[in-house]
Image (cartoon, rainbow, N blue to C red; front, top):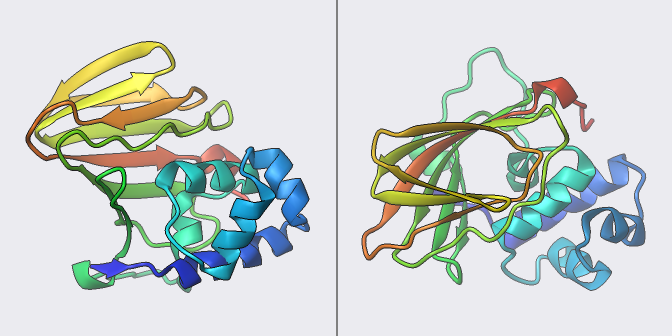
Length: 193
Protein backbone atom coordinates (compact mmCIF):
# COMPACT_ATOMS: atom_id res chain seq x y z
CA UNK A 1 0.00 0.00 0.00
CA UNK A 2 1.25 3.45 -0.88
CA UNK A 3 1.06 5.57 2.24
CA UNK A 4 0.64 9.15 1.21
CA UNK A 5 3.36 11.41 2.48
CA UNK A 6 2.51 14.55 4.40
CA UNK A 7 4.31 16.43 1.61
CA UNK A 8 2.00 14.94 -1.08
CA UNK A 9 -1.11 15.82 0.92
CA UNK A 10 0.21 19.34 1.47
CA UNK A 11 0.90 19.88 -2.23
CA UNK A 12 -2.59 18.67 -3.18
CA UNK A 13 -4.25 20.83 -0.53
CA UNK A 14 -2.35 23.92 -1.66
CA UNK A 15 -3.07 23.26 -5.36
CA UNK A 16 -6.81 22.72 -4.83
CA UNK A 17 -7.09 25.69 -2.46
CA UNK A 18 -5.38 27.92 -5.03
CA UNK A 19 -7.55 26.57 -7.87
CA UNK A 20 -10.58 27.51 -5.79
CA UNK A 21 -9.10 31.00 -5.34
CA UNK A 22 -9.12 30.72 -1.54
CA UNK A 23 -6.63 32.22 0.86
CA UNK A 24 -5.61 30.17 3.89
CA UNK A 25 -7.78 32.48 6.00
CA UNK A 26 -10.82 31.92 3.78
CA UNK A 27 -10.32 28.14 3.86
CA UNK A 28 -9.88 28.26 7.63
CA UNK A 29 -13.17 30.12 7.96
CA UNK A 30 -15.02 27.77 5.59
CA UNK A 31 -13.65 24.56 7.14
CA UNK A 32 -13.30 25.39 10.86
CA UNK A 33 -9.67 24.25 10.59
CA UNK A 34 -7.21 26.83 11.89
CA UNK A 35 -5.04 28.79 9.50
CA UNK A 36 -2.01 27.53 11.43
CA UNK A 37 -3.07 23.90 10.86
CA UNK A 38 -3.70 24.52 7.15
CA UNK A 39 -0.25 26.09 6.86
CA UNK A 40 1.30 23.13 8.69
CA UNK A 41 -0.44 20.64 6.38
CA UNK A 42 0.54 22.57 3.24
CA UNK A 43 4.18 22.62 4.40
CA UNK A 44 4.06 18.83 4.89
CA UNK A 45 5.03 19.23 8.55
CA UNK A 46 3.33 16.15 9.91
CA UNK A 47 0.36 13.91 10.20
CA UNK A 48 -3.18 15.09 9.72
CA UNK A 49 -6.30 13.31 10.92
CA UNK A 50 -8.93 11.99 8.56
CA UNK A 51 -11.55 14.18 10.24
CA UNK A 52 -9.45 17.30 9.55
CA UNK A 53 -9.03 16.21 5.93
CA UNK A 54 -12.80 15.71 5.82
CA UNK A 55 -13.44 19.28 6.96
CA UNK A 56 -11.00 20.65 4.39
CA UNK A 57 -12.38 18.47 1.58
CA UNK A 58 -15.96 19.54 2.33
CA UNK A 59 -14.99 23.22 2.32
CA UNK A 60 -13.13 22.74 -0.99
CA UNK A 61 -16.03 20.70 -2.46
CA UNK A 62 -13.84 17.67 -3.20
CA UNK A 63 -13.47 14.21 -1.72
CA UNK A 64 -10.80 13.33 0.83
CA UNK A 65 -9.26 11.16 -1.89
CA UNK A 66 -8.59 14.30 -3.95
CA UNK A 67 -6.38 15.54 -1.12
CA UNK A 68 -4.47 12.26 -1.05
CA UNK A 69 -3.51 12.11 -4.72
CA UNK A 70 -4.48 13.11 -8.25
CA UNK A 71 -4.24 10.59 -11.08
CA UNK A 72 -4.69 11.21 -14.76
CA UNK A 73 -8.17 10.51 -16.10
CA UNK A 74 -8.23 7.32 -18.13
CA UNK A 75 -10.98 4.98 -19.30
CA UNK A 76 -9.24 2.02 -17.62
CA UNK A 77 -7.49 2.49 -14.30
CA UNK A 78 -5.79 -0.50 -12.68
CA UNK A 79 -4.66 0.15 -9.11
CA UNK A 80 -2.53 -2.58 -7.53
CA UNK A 81 -2.87 -2.62 -3.76
CA UNK A 82 0.67 -1.35 -3.25
CA UNK A 83 -0.09 1.80 -5.28
CA UNK A 84 -3.40 2.73 -3.61
CA UNK A 85 -3.16 5.91 -1.51
CA UNK A 86 -3.32 5.19 2.22
CA UNK A 87 -3.83 7.55 5.13
CA UNK A 88 -2.55 6.22 8.48
CA UNK A 89 -3.87 8.03 11.54
CA UNK A 90 -1.98 6.11 14.24
CA UNK A 91 -3.30 8.32 17.04
CA UNK A 92 -6.85 7.21 16.21
CA UNK A 93 -5.85 3.66 15.11
CA UNK A 94 -7.46 4.45 11.74
CA UNK A 95 -6.32 3.39 8.26
CA UNK A 96 -8.08 4.71 5.14
CA UNK A 97 -7.21 3.24 1.73
CA UNK A 98 -8.61 4.81 -1.45
CA UNK A 99 -9.83 2.11 -3.84
CA UNK A 100 -11.44 4.26 -6.52
CA UNK A 101 -9.37 6.16 -9.06
CA UNK A 102 -8.43 9.58 -7.78
CA UNK A 103 -9.05 12.20 -10.41
CA UNK A 104 -11.27 15.25 -10.64
CA UNK A 105 -14.91 15.10 -11.58
CA UNK A 106 -15.81 11.53 -10.72
CA UNK A 107 -18.12 12.10 -7.72
CA UNK A 108 -17.79 8.59 -6.24
CA UNK A 109 -15.22 7.56 -3.65
CA UNK A 110 -14.75 3.90 -2.75
CA UNK A 111 -12.69 3.48 0.41
CA UNK A 112 -11.51 0.56 2.56
CA UNK A 113 -11.26 1.51 6.24
CA UNK A 114 -9.80 -0.22 9.29
CA UNK A 115 -9.91 0.65 12.98
CA UNK A 116 -7.81 -1.03 15.64
CA UNK A 117 -9.29 -1.97 19.03
CA UNK A 118 -10.66 1.15 20.73
CA UNK A 119 -10.04 3.29 17.64
CA UNK A 120 -12.22 6.12 16.34
CA UNK A 121 -12.20 7.97 13.03
CA UNK A 122 -12.94 11.31 14.62
CA UNK A 123 -16.05 13.25 13.67
CA UNK A 124 -16.51 13.97 9.97
CA UNK A 125 -18.42 17.16 9.20
CA UNK A 126 -21.77 17.02 7.43
CA UNK A 127 -21.60 16.90 3.64
CA UNK A 128 -23.92 18.99 1.51
CA UNK A 129 -27.53 17.75 1.27
CA UNK A 130 -27.68 15.15 -1.49
CA UNK A 131 -24.38 13.42 -0.66
CA UNK A 132 -24.94 9.81 0.40
CA UNK A 133 -22.72 7.23 2.09
CA UNK A 134 -22.95 3.46 1.97
CA UNK A 135 -21.16 1.25 4.49
CA UNK A 136 -20.64 -2.51 4.36
CA UNK A 137 -19.05 -4.03 7.48
CA UNK A 138 -16.43 -6.55 6.34
CA UNK A 139 -15.13 -7.84 9.69
CA UNK A 140 -15.56 -7.11 13.37
CA UNK A 141 -18.15 -4.86 14.98
CA UNK A 142 -18.40 -1.25 13.81
CA UNK A 143 -20.21 1.46 15.75
CA UNK A 144 -21.53 4.28 13.58
CA UNK A 145 -22.55 7.60 15.15
CA UNK A 146 -24.89 9.73 13.00
CA UNK A 147 -25.59 12.93 14.92
CA UNK A 148 -27.20 11.55 18.10
CA UNK A 149 -28.01 8.12 16.63
CA UNK A 150 -25.78 5.10 17.31
CA UNK A 151 -25.86 2.03 15.03
CA UNK A 152 -23.90 -1.16 15.70
CA UNK A 153 -22.94 -3.12 12.59
CA UNK A 154 -21.55 -6.65 12.35
CA UNK A 155 -19.73 -8.31 9.44
CA UNK A 156 -22.03 -8.43 6.41
CA UNK A 157 -24.35 -5.64 7.61
CA UNK A 158 -24.89 -2.65 5.34
CA UNK A 159 -25.97 0.92 6.00
CA UNK A 160 -27.06 3.78 3.77
CA UNK A 161 -27.41 7.33 5.06
CA UNK A 162 -27.77 10.91 3.90
CA UNK A 163 -24.37 12.29 4.82
CA UNK A 164 -25.55 15.80 5.67
CA UNK A 165 -25.02 14.96 9.33
CA UNK A 166 -21.99 14.70 11.59
CA UNK A 167 -20.73 11.11 11.37
CA UNK A 168 -18.08 9.12 13.18
CA UNK A 169 -17.10 5.46 13.19
CA UNK A 170 -15.74 3.66 16.25
CA UNK A 171 -14.42 0.28 17.29
CA UNK A 172 -15.64 -0.33 20.83
CA UNK A 173 -14.24 -3.89 20.88
CA UNK A 174 -10.87 -5.57 21.37
CA UNK A 175 -10.81 -6.94 17.79
CA UNK A 176 -9.94 -5.02 14.60
CA UNK A 177 -12.82 -3.88 12.41
CA UNK A 178 -12.89 -3.15 8.68
CA UNK A 179 -15.53 -1.77 6.36
CA UNK A 180 -16.09 -0.63 2.82
CA UNK A 181 -17.35 2.92 2.35
CA UNK A 182 -18.85 4.41 -0.81
CA UNK A 183 -19.37 8.17 -0.85
CA UNK A 184 -21.70 9.34 -3.61
CA UNK A 185 -21.28 13.04 -4.26
CA UNK A 186 -22.13 12.92 -7.97
CA UNK A 187 -24.75 15.62 -7.44
CA UNK A 188 -21.95 18.06 -6.62
CA UNK A 189 -19.18 17.04 -8.98
CA UNK A 190 -17.01 20.05 -9.56
CA UNK A 191 -13.76 19.72 -11.47
CA UNK A 192 -10.65 20.81 -9.60
CA UNK A 193 -8.66 21.63 -12.71
